[in-house]
Image (cartoon, rainbow, N blue to C red; front, side, top):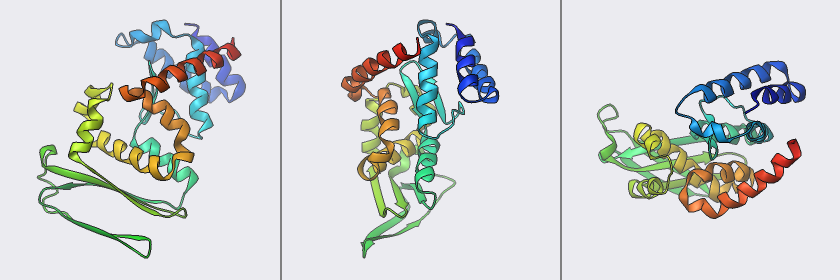
Length: 223
C-alpha cells in the first residue's frame, strides 16, 4: 500500500497537521500484525474512509471512531457527538436498570416524565441487568426508547465483533440502544453513519454488497 499517497492527499486537501495525525494512525495500523487485512487494501480505501468521517463533521480519533476491514466503526460517544452537532441543546440520558432498581415513566402532554431510583449502583453485575432506557430531549421533540436484556442478546448474535461485546458489554449496549433510538426518530441525520456502521452486522449483508459496489465507484475517482 502506498501510504505516502494518503498523507499527500490529506495534506493537500486539508492541512499538514491533519495529514500527520492520520498518517501516524495508518502506519500504526499497518504495522500491527493483527491487522492482516491492511495487506489487501490500497491507499484509496483509507482516503475514502477519511472523507466519509469528514462529511459527517466528525473526527477520526481512533478511540470512538475507528477503521476496520469492513468499514468504519462508531461507538456510542461518536453517535452522541453527531447528535450534539445537529442539536447542540440536546439532553441525552442513557442508563441501565437492574433487578433491584425502581423505574417508571409516562408521557404527559407529549413530554417524557420518568423516575429512576438506583438501589445498589456499586454492587450490580451484568447478569442483574433488566433493561436499558434512552431519553433524548431537544428542539425536535422528546423521545424515550427501551430495550430489554433479551433484545440486546439478539443484537449481539448478529454482530461480527462478539469479542468487543465480551470486553465492552455495557458500552455496546449503550451504542445498540442509541442506534435504535435514532433509527426511529433521527434516521435522516444518521443515515450515512448507520449504513457504514451496520456493516458490522450479518443482517446487513445485502447492504454490504451495495456499499462495496459504491466504494469501487469512489475508488475509481481517486485513481
